[in-house]
Length: 260
Image (cartoon, rainbow, N blue to C red; front, top):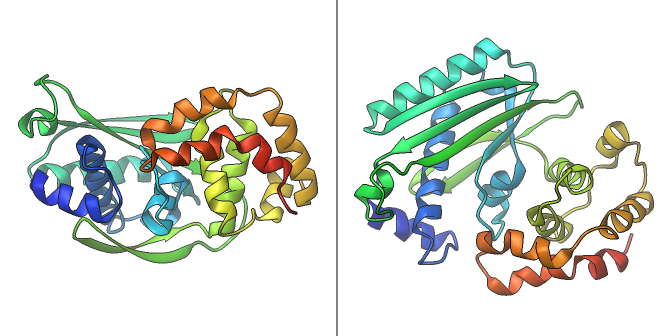
């Protein structure tokens, strides 16, 4: 394991604020977990998605908590075996860790790392743990994941990740579909809109949306019932640049002027 000083050195290169020691520790653990995952049997059946994939491969300027994957036929047993191997390898590297696996439609794993915060003077509570969550969701839409290299915290590895237009389509679905709206979805949408547009074939299959014009109307309708000051406060602690909070606070105006 890297020392806290080493982790913070790499974190600075990744854009984290100097005061974000806990976030840096989590990002290092995420990176190590991804490096280990790719060597296990069945890892070819999952593809990296979500905010953390955007952070790793497109320099999304916010912290992302979880490791999310699309699942292309991975069984419950295979997932369970992957987690067992992962925990074993982490223990061999000196980590004190407990894990919990749940199967509720999707596959979920909760990894809790003991001692790291207290031993590095990041917490006054000896029993406070770092949680890293791994989620996989069944994917029925047919597409070919990309293979990309990351180089973070002194770790270099190649993993499967969804194409950027699929990632934006999935982020758009989250923006439209969450029962409790989250500011991060709107922030990520604006970020992705500077790179790509959502894959319409994906949106048509999942939501019946076959044009950006229809999508714009639905997003505007969604925005009409939301409080963007609250959503901005929701995402603010995860942003690396305080001024970026305006991208969420002014999202209604942004989407109204969205050029499609």
